[in-house]
Image (cartoon, rainbow, N blue to C red; front, side, top):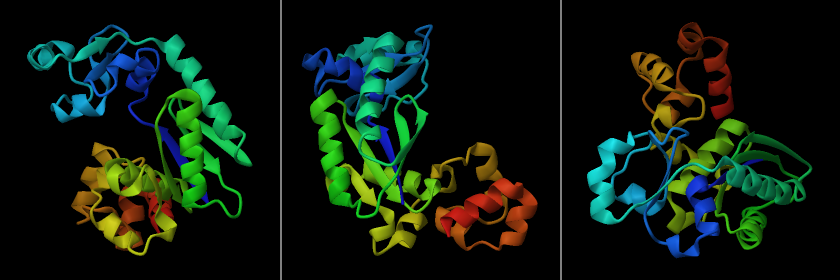
Length: 226
């Protein structure tokens, strides 16, 4: 089994660690040239501020709602990432750091949702960074589980094991293809042309046209979904 650990609103969370007064306040972090918004707190998302939006287009919303705006500080973010990854690395047999705020964990036998919740609490307690953890039998399914955990925090408490869930197909039926790891707009369009609109459609699709249209990448993704 594999787990994907993803830090929630990572850059904003790092800013909050060093300024607790920002807790429960709308926060955004900007790109290198302060041109676009690249990280949003949940409160900022609730205001309708889109990911990647140019800063100048959001000035009215920012002023009206007292949104706290920060330039990116990659020295800080890199240090906080290293702290989180160090904790994770000590808990599992192997780990692959996927990005500054994500890592795949190879799980040992007996690792459960409850084990993941203990690990999640440890990361929060030691670093102040909140994470979500998704568990699955492949990287693609672990990523899908993490997406569900993040979108349903009140239900999952930030942890979700897709393999242990009774209705994994139901979750796939609610997931558009562009919600899958590795499916961008181009692949989603090609899948839609095959009549494939959801992850479940993709799982159950005829593999021959999938291979013909998407090549070995599409075939591999379909195998992972199965």
